[in-house]
Amino acid sequence: MATSSNRNNSKLGTPTTLTKGGGVSKTNTAKQNYTARSVGNDHGSLTFGAIHKQGDVTSDVMLQASDGRHGIVLDKDGSRKGCTQITAPGRITIDAGLDKKEAEDTLMIHSWNGNICIVASNGKLRLQGTDIELVAVGEGGSKGNIRMKASETIELDGKKIIGNAKTLCKMVSSGQVEMSANTAMNIFGSLIRNTTDAVANKDGKNGGQLLQNLQNLIG
Image (cartoon, rainbow, N blue to C red):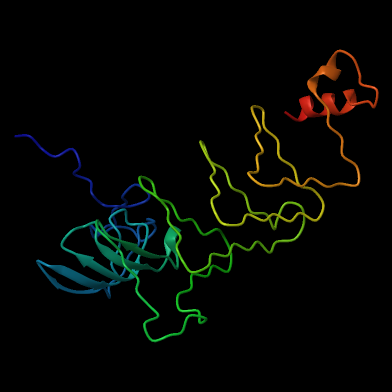
C-alpha cells in the first residue's frame, strides 16, 4: 500500500524528540499553547491563539474566510511579532471622511520607523486629489530627497510648470535636448556661455574645452 511521504507533520523547528510518556519534548521550537479557542462553520472561523501551519508563529486573533487567501491575522510572536496581515483575493476598500470637511485629515497611514511600500505588481499606481503634495523632511545630503525614476518616460503636463533650485538646476541628456516656446523665450544669467562639441579638437577664443571635457565625464 502506498503511504504519504509527509508522515512526520509535526511542524517542529527541530527534530522531534519523544519523552518516555510518548509526548513531544518541550525543548523543540514549535509554538505551543493550551488555551486556543475557535468558533466557525463552513463559511469561516474566528480563532484566538491559533498556531500557523509552519509552527513558528502564534496569532492572537485569526479571522479566516472559506477562501484560505481571505483573512485578517494579528500575530503575537516569532518572526512576525506584532504584525497585522490583511489579505484578500479580491478588492480591499477603505472609505472614510463622509462627515468631515475638506481641510481635515480623515485617513492616515503612519509608520514610526521603517519604510512604507505601495506596490502594484501588475497594474497602475494612481494618486488623485484636489491637490497632491510630496514633502521630504530628512536632513543631510543623503536624506530629504524626492526621486523619480522611470524605465521609459517621465511626462509633465500642466498650465504652469515651475521649478526653483537654491543651489543647482541641471538638465543632462546623453541624447537630444529640445527647448521651444511659441511666444517668447527669456534666458537670463549673470554669465551665459554656449559651447559646442567642436572645441574638442580646437579650443575656442573664449575657452570651452574644459567644459566640454567635464560634460563628457559626467555623461
